[in-house]
Image (cartoon, rainbow, N blue to C red; front, side, top):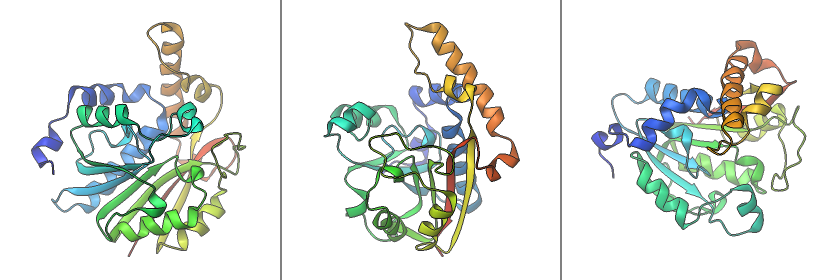
Length: 252
C-alpha cells in the first residue's frame, strides 16, 4: 500500500501529463476536476480509496490524492486490440512504472469481480458502460463494492445526440434511461450533458505525433477551444450538440 508521501511525490510522467492537461480532450479534465472536488469535500483528512473501472492508463486520476485500484479486462480480442481496449502485459508494466498513486491493478470483469464488499470510497468509470452487455449487473456490482456514503462517477456517450457507430458499443444511453438504471441501485442520482460538439471537438480528437507537428498543434488548439465551449454552465441541460453524459450517484 502506498503511503501518503508516495501519493504526493508524483513521477515525471504524471507531472508532464498535468502540465499538458489544458491541451488534452476536455472530458478527462472535467472528470478529474469532479474527482478532486468529491474527494476534497468528503475525505476528512483521510486518504481515499478509488476504484477505476476500465481505466487502463487512467489519465483522469493522475495527481488525485487517493489510493487507486484499476480493474480492466485482459486485452484478447481483435476488437479490443483495434480499439485500444483492455490491458496487456506492456500496459500493466507501464502503469506501475509511471504512476505514484496506483495501489493495485486487477485483471478482471467488473460484472463478476472478486472485489470485497464496501471496499471503496469512490468508483469512477469513464466511457465504459456502453461496452458492457450486462449493464444492470455492472451497476449493481459497483454499488456492492462502494462503502456507505460512497459515490459512483461515470461518463458515457450521449445517446440523445450521438449515433452509435462503434462496433464494441452495446448501446448509447439517453439521459432518462441512464437515470433509471442508476436509480435502481443508488439513493441519489444526477446526470448532466457534457462536452460541446462541433469542429473544434473533432480537431481536438486527432492523435498527436512528432512526425505530424501541424496536426498535433491543431489538435491542441482544438482542445483548448473545446474546453471553453464545454465550460458553459447551460451546457449540462443541453441534449443537442453535446457528446457525453456525466453522472454521479451516491450510496447511502
